[in-house]
Length: 340
Image (tube, rainbow, N blue to C red; front, top):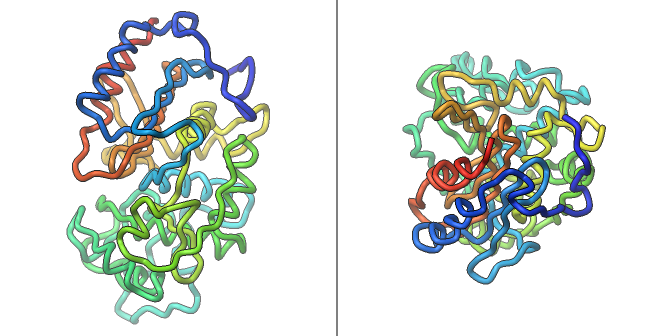
């Protein structure tokens, strides 16, 4: 796809009509956000590579960063693809325990030995907790998160069954560090953020590991565990324009200004339709003939990519319990604004 410009230094904004977007339909967003989505702090809509809609709320502006929660997982997915392409990691079917030679599982733990990077990326590794009841608070109290996760990994259930796990994403972050010699934060700054004009993420020294420290307003930069591994499943702060840059990179199948930042095949594999509607740490959605893939984070943080409409929606939100599904907002106010 040919682009007139790349938003490496600055996004360009263009009148919605020029981008074949219905401004009246887009104007409904304002009312909807204020009445039903009051924890949204920023929203950026990009069409054909240009910002067509951008608003900030609750005292926030375009340079303010937000803790994007599980959107972090999709960044980790991109970094795994880059690390495989650079031959730091063999392939997605490399065994997880290859990267932790110091960890010796019980002889009976056969299942643990068979778990691969692919299983962590697709959330098909077994764990002892019930689905959607992961004991993250318990993990955060450990002095060694990685050992705690490896002890859980492969317990109960069977390989191949979908079970959402933030712990598995943390193992992937640690695998990036074990294979590249750099934290996920450092590797991302060098190989992903800097090349596409995203702001570099600073180191954030944690003083304690309580809920508010890890998930609240105290989060700055990219959180790391007690042993210095960047958190793989949450803990990254981004501004909405940079969220949109990351989505734009995926929409362009890993190419940025003629440079292949992420392998094209990795983007395709990461977003390939499957029965779980979950790719490599990306949620997949197809509705009314429209296919989208989304990086989703607690509280309503979203990077939504809709390739066939050349559309990206980036939403940064304040963490609240049970926020309204952002897909409803996208489906009702943004997709219908695209004029074919």
